Length: 131
Image 1: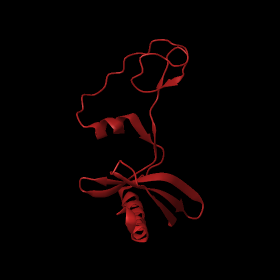
Image 2: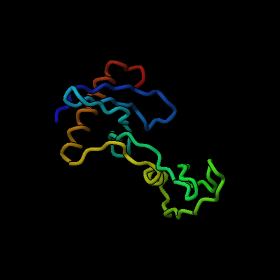
Image 3: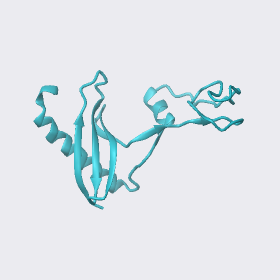
Image 4: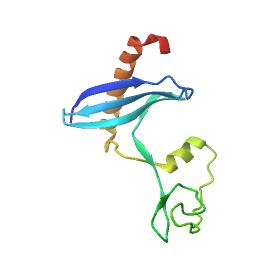
């Protein structure tokens, strides 16, 4: 599989860890949007698009936000889901989100990350006012 296009959308936001979003086209046939470029403690990395994990109501099956006490549809009390005792908020965020799409192999992940970060560096040169 070949990456045929990478578009970078640099973000100028109060959250300084999120640097940009990327849209990646594979083989001129498949697009993945909302790949995040994030500034971590050891440099830049990419995070794949994700969605919040929802908790289904046992009575009506409505999908509620995590840690809700009552169903937003029928009002039934939701079962208490034990939360792991983890101090880091970034790890808690990972437990509440699930990737929509992600690389299967480490080699493809490295290829994808290199292409996105290279495109990000090129885009930074075009828009130096933000950096």
